Length: 155
Image: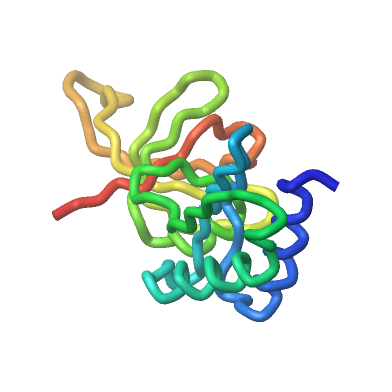
């Protein structure tokens, strides 16, 4: 069993006790630097990172294996990777790039297990006459058609 597999098994067991947290990414470098990235339904705080770090360290033997461990939350500018992240960000504005390289900035209005629904306003030429009008647009994108989604932070 590789170190990554061992850490993954430990994380699965630990995160079972913390249902609001979920694993985003796990990487183990050649020199045994373990990096765990978490997210949570209500975000991730410092205490969550400390708790998970201690739980993983307890299960790994420092005498047997020399390693370093880093536990962090998914950053604000990190792309969304899982359906659970879309669901927790309903009501927020996202920058979405589709597999056809179309880019939209839109409000995430719904997310289910198959797709996410986005709404935004756009200026389009009038159907009759000259000039432009503002129209409300809504699109339901299956996750397979989304190349990247990033939550936009506004101040």
